[in-house]
Image 1 (tube, rainbow, N blue to C red):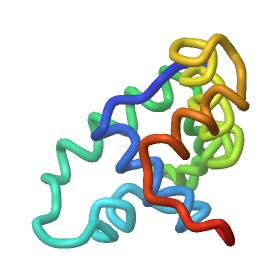
Image 2: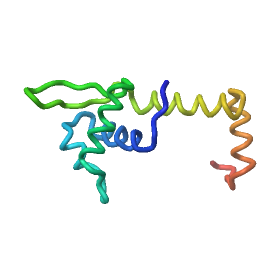
Image 3: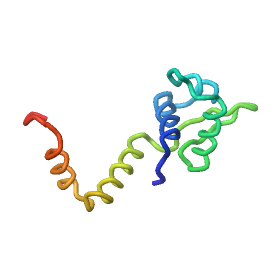
Image 4: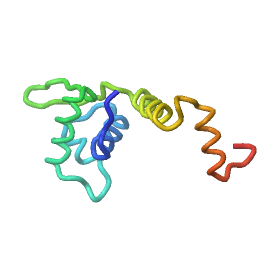
Length: 107
């Protein structure tokens, strides 16, 4: 699965939360300081090209929706970290994490 830039991930986070949105709604959904409308529009165009977002046409307007679920994206990204840094081993990851974090027995 293709990876996303930080800005692309932020747009996807908003769209995952909204499930479907017109560009104006999507741009207005960001917390302050809001990105420029043109920036959101550019990110949406890129995400369509990367096949993360689809759209339905309503006259001259488009309603955008995710083609990739948040869970599938996170799973792919986590799998990439496992293979790149831990030879695909979850136990190596868990061992690294527990050695480097203050985790209680209950956690």
